[in-house]
Every structure is written in C-alpha cells, then in structure tokens.
Length: 106
Length: 422
Image (cartoon, rainbow over all chains, first blue to last red; front, side):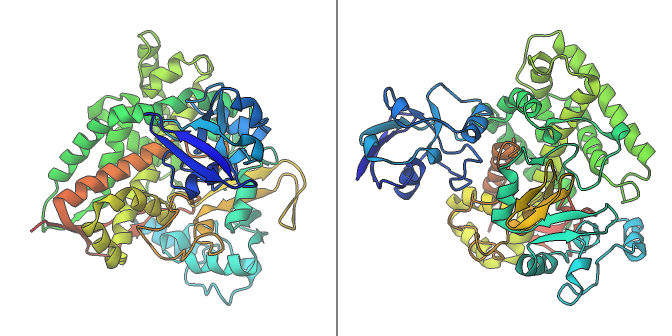
C-alpha cells in the first residue's frame, strides 16, 4: 500500500492507503476525503479533482499530458504545483505523497 | 403557449408528434424538430435510438442531415476531442447565416476560446460567488415572501424567471429597474421566429440591436472607471477582451445572459415538476434538508435544461465504429446520455439521494464545460433551502406547458399552489 496525505485548505489532514494502479483522485474518493468532486469520474474533462502537489513530490508525480494542461489552464485557481489528481497514477514511488486540496473545485 | 406553435405542429411535415417511436422506421426518426419536445414525447424516441442505433444518422430534416450521439460514453468521446469535433461555426443545430452570427467563445475553438473564457471565468468562480451568497439569499427570500399562499399562480414567471433575472442583473451590475430587458433579450436571442415570441427575424434583430446599444453604453461607462467585479467591467478591462470588436463583445455578453437565463430558470421549474411527480422524494426532502445539495445535481440531470450541444467534424473520423465525415454535423444529446442505463443507475428515476449524482452530462465536459455550473448550483441550493423553511408543499395543480425548442428544454407555464407549514 502507498500512503497519501491530503491536507484541506484549512489545514485538516486525511491520511489514506492507496493501491498501486489506482489514481490519487480515486484514493481520495474511495476513502471519503473531502474537497475532491471528480464530476467526470476520472476522464480529465472537468478539473474538479484539482490538487496542489507539495515540494519535491511535484517532480515524482510525472508530466502532464496536453489534455490536463488544457483543463487546468482554464482554472482561475491554478498555481505552479497544480495537478488534476485523476491523472496521477498511484505507484510505489509515491509512498508518502502530500497534496493540498483547494478551497473550491471549479 | 400561443396558437402559432400549435398550428406549426400540425402543419409541419417534420414533426414527430403523435408518431409511434417503436414502429416507425429508425431512419425516419428526427429529433431536431421542436414538436416532440414541446409535447413531452421525446423520451421513448431517445430510448429506442440508444438501444437500436446509438449513433444515428438523420439524412433529411428541416435543418439538413446530422448525426445524433445518444450514449453517455460516446458523448464523452466527442466532448474530449475538441480538435476533431469543432465548436465552430455554431453549437446550435441550425446552420447560421454569417450576417446573423454573433461570435462568442462557446462557438470558438482553441486558442481563442481559451483566451476569452479565461477573462470571464473568475466572475462565476466559487471564490467570487461566496461574496454573493448573502445577497442572493436575501433576494430569494424576498421573492418567496411575496408569493400568495393557497392560491394558484404561475411558478415560471413569478419565481423561475424573476430569480434568474435578478441574478443576471447582479452579475452584470445591470440597472436593477431595467432587469427585465435582460430576460427579454435572452429569450429573443434563442427564439425561433414564429415560435411564439419573436414574430419575425426582423423583430429578433431589433431586440439584439437594442441589447448591443445598451451594453455599449455600460461598456463605455465602465471602461473609463476603476475595474469592478461585474462581467461588463471585467470584459472592458481584460487584456484579451478590451479591444474586441463590438459584435464579439455582444456575442459574449449574449452567451453569458442566455447561459445564465434559460438554463437555471428551467432547472428551477423542473425541480418542482420532478418532486411533484415523485411524492416519495418530496417526503425525503421534507424530512432531511441536508439532501438539498445532492438533490440539486439530480434536478440538473433529470431536467437537462439544454438538450444537446452540436459539434462539427473537422476531419474524417471513427466514433465507436461509425464513420463520420469531415464537415458532418454531430449532435450530442445530453438529455439521452443522462438516461443511459449503462452509466446511470435507474436513470429514469428521480432520486434525490442518488449516489454519485454529480456524474451527469448537463454541464458538458472538456474545455467547453459550463462555466456557470457553480453559480447555477448555488442558486438552486439557496432557493430550495429557503423554500423548505417556508412551505410544506409547492403543489403543481395543472399540466405544465413546455418550450417549443429541441435545444432549450424547459417550461413556459407551471401552475402551482403553495401550502404553508402547519
């Protein structure tokens, strides 16, 4: 199992165990982590599973594809460490991953 | 509705009203004619096509040949490939005449779509909406407190239109006393000449001209003032929008007016219809007001206030085994995808505590996903929160009348009686 820490915008923490092969979005949704809507169900077409990836993890979660870039580029809340969590596959390398969820999904 | 439309039904050779959806030849089914939508006879046509020919070619109709995409996952395919399925020249089923077309980003491809959308988006982003919540709740309360108890009235004009009009005026910082003009312009912009509202194309164009003149005045006032948080000011000061030609300014304004008008209006009415058709769900709501946010998503799915969006293929392509040719019109019937039993559990049931209720097509997906979706949800949530604290029952007491359109799926008249809390 791979441990992921979700931090709400107000600082409360949710630690979950995720299965490799799943996605960070699914890890949140299946464990009832608040702050992730995932309206489109994981097809990179709504931007409501937006997260901010902490520090050195940004490199480890991999590159964005053009579709994710296109969806995120329309978000007014986008920052440099923004990602759509449905596009981050859970791998053993991500054990200990820390992400913050935004105040609003949009 | 007027007699003009009733006559049109009977006279039009294209109307499907009264035809048996299960025995007529598949190839003759034409979803584009407004008849079955106004008559509320569309569901069995959609069901048959989903089961028998989920990507269906209508070779001849009043609006020419077009493809219909009926299944949820096929619609997602189209939505998420905007380079193959273009939003230009229009997202309506009717091919537009160039001299009558107003450019707006809903009908643009990348990169222009993205540039213009980015300017308008912050005004309807949740962070901005949070500031509006108190004002919206106050205005909703005022509207509801002015309604009569135990007396029949039209919910559409007294609540659905009134509330959405007030919201538009708020977003545009539009002179409040003139707010009905916004609704009038929006209705004219989407009306079909002879369909009950605009009697002629000329009348329609005059309304649009009046709208342009009014907003040009507001633009000129605000472009010279400090930037504000209303939409006109944002467009007038935005880097990508401040030099836009007048027709592009008007096109984008009309998009925001229409986008925030019919859709929310018809979801407001649709919720009342759905709860009346499903008294058990109404009882659940009375017993548990915390279901409202989830119910709002279910209302938006169940109503599907825009029945479809159109795309145009930019190249020959394959959609789930069907060959689509460059230039073909492709209609994504959201209203059908939202009833697709392969993706939506018990799709014909209105179910206010439906698990995963947000997973519906009514807002579209991909780069053109409805920009105002959070505003719409907030308005509906506040409205229902305020309704349930005041009234025990919003009772529908007569047959609703529906819009003559295969695009705008909504109501023109909904007679109700309000029953107070004991």
